Image (cartoon, rainbow, N blue to C red; front, top):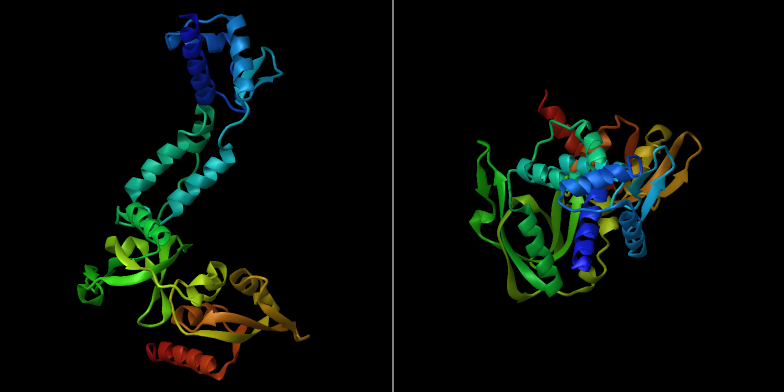
Length: 327
């Protein structure tokens, strides 16, 4: 019977230390005894020392704060306060998570901290004004996609978009897409699925929160060299806003004032040649899409497309169409 009481006390003590202490906030022995009594568990000071030793031996580190009176705290927690703040920021800033899911996840994250840490999290400024997804099935979709990738099976799904009346419409005349799932990617606050289409012999991107009627088929996934050598990091550098297009090796003339943005976008793998006149010639792999052209345009002449000629013409056509709308 004594051993059962000891186990009960040990579990109650662990719960108290987890919820009430961290490296900034500890409890005195008297406070711990009061918390145990409130939980319906009796104890004495000597028993607490044995329990602390038992927890330490189990890898649950209980340390002393050298203050008067001496306080004890749980030294190893799953996350620091700063890490909890980062997680909350990520959840609140993710547009693919609905407002309801966001609230639930933030509540779960806060449960990983002590009461003292949670008070600091409550004071954290919420990042408002972010448009959240209205699709509650994102997490389920991600699970099904992972299942298809692991089973090496094709994925069937329907894809939605908005019409000019802001009504949800099925794309592809409501017919399902059946493609090989290659990689889940996170970009600009949304989850995207990169699929391989046998029909077009190319990759395509789909926003996961716009996918519906999704299920794993019995068809075996396509296997080829392009899929086997797919490089998510390299693909992410080439694709802007997850818009697919023809891949090109673009040569850009870049002023020094725009070099930070170019390196941030394409990484240190960009081939750079200093031209000695406060400009550089930069060779990058990119996709010729309106989003790529829009990215260049925002630098107002600090970045110029040198080659290939097809890309120069495409960019010039993009700018001409914009001007026509305002003439």
